[in-house]
Length: 179
Image (cartoon, rainbow, N blue to C red; front, side, top):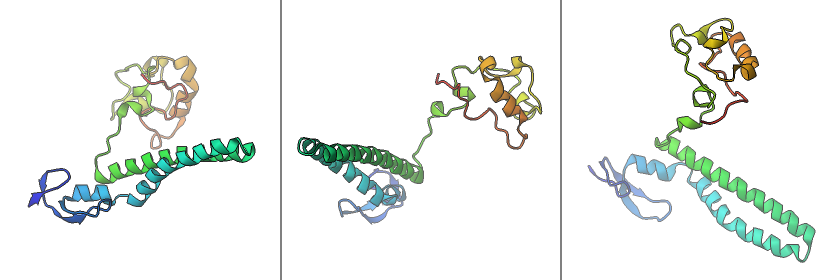
């Protein structure tokens, strides 16, 4: 038993070479996962994020000499920069998932309970015998939506689904708005 060099927790540690600094330190399994989960991808996209602005500046300068080449380069490099930023955040998220530190924000999930049009209906979401299990569309007073007139077609499709294919609330409602 020792102390991890990175998180300072006393755990079962082993000597591990940091792939970035090449230093060897006692490291716990959790911290080793942080370093070994998608290191090449994260390294590549983080370098691209810092190098592509130089090409963007070069394209801006090139616009003064050959506007077609400069503008084309500018558009291409801006798109590549946006893709690099997205992919870096994607691989960071995948690393947090692999390590076990990723936390889902329930308020960002698009479903009825996070919609500002949601209203609480007592008998709707009971797991055993809730109204969501019904084989046909119930009375509109039992639907947990304040704008039922606008979403009636969604609810009709929802209750037309087989019970095994149905979720607790309809998926991908176009009227969903964040609270």
